[in-house]
Length: 301
Length: 298
Image (tube, rainbow over the protein chains, first blue to last red):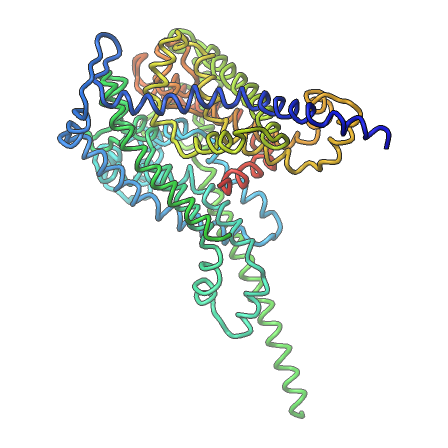
């Protein structure tokens, strides 16, 4: 009792000291986020209204950059390409991710090893995995052509990355390999959250695999599905490494993503104001997607 | 035979059939799993196999399936590759990764503790500000970051790149560490507070041990993400001596040093895969904690 009294007496100044201490603890973090996130964000907006070369005079140009965007054919092509890529890469990642998650769901023996193996490529950088795949896909020394030729499945070596259609397909293949483990783990968490009793009682009622899938599995894990889909879509919209490394944007500039085109304008041609305007558009797309994510995740509570 | 006996027998056969079916399905599941696992492992295994071929054989068109002779020459070639050899680039990547890990741990721990355990004016606003940066993809702020880093002469420095990477890690790190601190019961701290310990010494002597799993998770993500990152490293480093590993390997692929040396490239791929795979395999549990925590972060 005696010990607590003085503490109570000092309460006011002690509380204030606590407040100050708390503020001091978060200051470095808040400073970092302000300097490296908030200010750059505001600067992107500011720069997008300027003609901003790396060196030399910059000039206020108002909405000129944005007007130029609507006339920039490569930019529109990049937008179109990025969305097409996203639309094509998302279903295989999701479907294979779901199949893998279903396969590794039950805790049978050695299942941990399989989960780990399917997840391994996620830990490898996308840049490095692209370097690996571009070599496997090479027409002369690539292993895919070797196997296809040995099995007589193709008459002659294929230039997989040399034609727009096949380039898209093989890049999708490489990205599915690299990222499907992530989707698998998310969906696995969703599957494991469904109580077994539900399936058992459905089986008693005579429900088959597809009925259980349709009426139990899919509805009950819809926020995991939504999360997996949205994260996968966000990743695809922001993709750069695979195109920069595997096709260098070719053939005939057919695989230049939005981020790639921003990169080219800002860091090759050093039209940084113009790049900033494109970044704002990209940011708008991403904020809309994240907003959708927040909305979907909120529903559950 | 009477009816009940026949029924019992039918029942037994039925059970037997069901058991056999379940067993067959299990074996089928393993078969599918093994085939898929081999397909998933193939690219990494193939890269490794080629990295230990003789350099000439690694360049053979069409390729050989198995090395005629095992050799480390591809790795040796890497040590003198380009202008300076791979050692410098491994060093660059390592230094950047270590600064990123250290910075992320310190800032996330301090911030996480502050947000979890103290109340002060503006706390919620600041916390939402930090978290909202999770919505901003770093790709969209690279241009001003570049302008700023050039302005303060930190471009082409490992430290400058690490600063950028620390920032990318912070929102996730703070969120994770705040949750770690929130999970620690209040009583533990209160008794220490009554004993007259200062906040910093409570954090250092008492709390750090309790939130260690969170710290390990932050460290793993900081390491793997900075080790693998490509776009920012490509933009912020123009001096070849400062290239991180992925950027250096890309210069091999683009044939900047003459013909593309695929054998050396695959040796480089293996060198850059090993640290992240090793850390992941050793600390998988912490990695998965972060994945689930991060994915349902909002």
